[in-house]
Amino acid sequence: MEAGLPANTSAERKARPASGIVHLGLGAFFRAFGCVYVADAMAASGGDWGIIGVSLRSPDTRDALKRRDWRYLSVTLAPDSEEIRDIEVLNNVLVAPENPRAVLEAMADPAIKIVSLTVTEKGYCHNPSTGALNLEHPDIQHDLTNPHPVSAPGFLVRALEMRRTAGHMPFTVLTCDNLPENGKLVRGMVLQLAKEIDPRLAAWTETNGRFPSTMVDRITPATTQADIDRIAAHTGISDAAPVFHEPFSQWAIEDDFVDGARPDFAAAGAEMVTDVTAHENMKLRMLNGTHSALAYTGYLAGHETIADTIADPVFARYARLLWSEIMPSVEAPKGVSLADYADALFARYSNPSIRHRTWQIAMDGSQKLPQRILGTLRDNMAAGRSSPGLCLAVAAWMRYGAGTDEAGQPIDVRDPLADQMRDAAGTSDTVAGKVAAYLALRDVFPADLADRLQEPLTQAAESLWRDGARRAIEKVAT
Image (cartoon, rainbow, N blue to C red; front, side, top):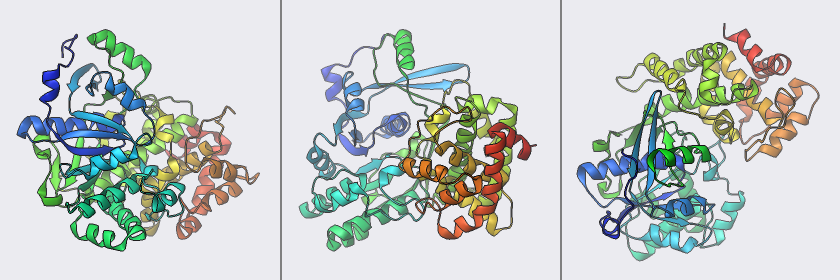
């Protein structure tokens, strides 16, 4: 793309396709991923699939995007080059806390066929160890009795309620978050909340609604002010909300939509499948699992990014060890070699242009570990396979959650269970006692799994606390 792109004109603005999608949680990932697929699908096959974005918490994204009339730059970062595109698929961005009624009215509009979500694991207000909606969560407690919700599940249910009352069909709920069987999981949470509000609504949604599961994959580091300044100098465009991402992108989607209404995702390169489970498990365990493991151990060892971490030969060996422990628990999708997939992940992690911070990936670990790592540990223990690398990853999460790094410097632990994690780390003077306290966190560790993990996690944690992350890895990844 040439620098100095022209500003959008009124005529160009009116020519945009009408909105057919509302997206909850309009962060950098979806703008670097889903918006690009939708733009490409419309370019290939047409259709009114413009997107109304919704920020569930802060107006910052809305305010930044509004400066260019919802256009933004998408920057692909290859190891030795970059490609810049102007993405024009957003028609508006709403801020839920400012006007929840406007969000509900947008979702209830029968022209909207899909409501998609990237609200992160914690945004579903569920119990990660069971997958059930947490009815005691303050946001869910609010949404049970208030027609103007604050949570993502609350917005889904109240908007579905409005559509049912008006005699419209429901929208398809298309979750794009890293949750196992994410569509089924969100369906269960929506039906659970709907049943609490109105059993007739739950029955209608169960019969008419569609919740396809998906697998999404594109590494998207957080945009910094330095990134914004650099791209402005390069293009001459003052864009307050550009997104930066790797070249690789993969989207597998179960082809199950209300009335079959959807963009031509296949024309944009998505894989339309009947069952996404194999793709999902492969990605959650092999990519997200190793990402989390490298984030906690790498951060403790002083590495700022995943690329920095994997450039360390000790951590390179550790990544290979992790994949050797994970792959026996993964059923490969048809036509996929897990060994080749691991090699491709290693190359992606090594891309020096992707400054994906270990601290960023480490956020909300209590919500991520059950599906990224604990499921693999459960499978391996059931099969009698040892998992020293994965145990070390969980121990590193515990060490990280204590709130200080190996040099004694404070860590800004961003996690819904940050207080409980800090308390668990401080509950005992012995490492075994700390591990036992962590394993008592039922939002993360089911009781039966906690009992079986006590011994191997204590062994890993003692090595980590005593020797530091890098030396502990050297002992298991030889």
